[in-house]
Image (tube, rainbow, N blue to C red; front, side, top):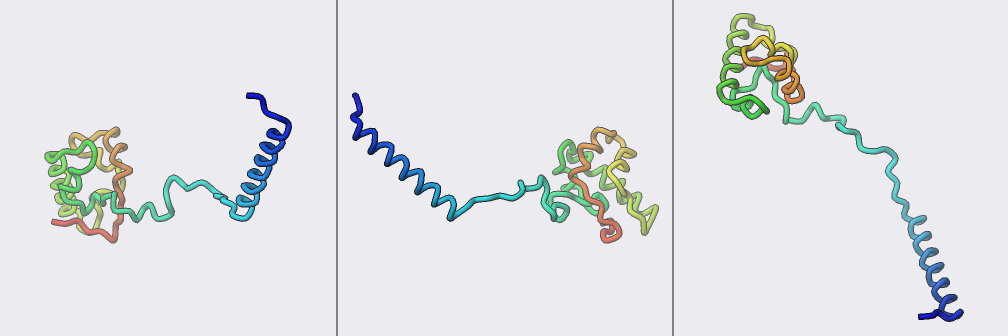
Amino acid sequence: MIWTQRQRAVLVGALLLLSACLTARFAAHPRFVPDPQPPQGPRYADLEDRIDPNTADWPAWAALPGIGEKRARQIAAERDRRAALMPGRPPFTRAEDLEELPGIGPATAERLAPHLRFDWPASRPSR
C-alpha cells in the first residue's frame, strides 16, 4: 500500500498530538523515586524472624536451617547448663560462642548468625 501525501501528513500530525498529550500528562504527574529501597529497612532488627539463643526453646532452634530436633535439644540443654553455672551472665554473647558446642563448627555458626539476635540483659534464660 502506498501512502498519499495527505495520509502521511495526518499520520505525522496524530503522532505529534499523541506525543504532546503524553508529555503533558507525564509533566503534570511525575513519577520519581529519589533513592532505591535499602536492602534492610531501619527496623530490620525488630523483626521476629531471628531468635535469641539465650531464651529460645528447642522448637525455635529446630526451625533454623541445618539444625534438627536432636541438635536443637542439645543446644537448649547446654544453654540451660551454662545459665545455671553462671547466673546473671548470658550463656551466649555472639554467634561464635556456639562453636564450643559439639557438632557446631565455624561454618554452621556463620550460617546461623543472620538468624540470631543477642538481647542480653533484657533476655533471661528459660528453664
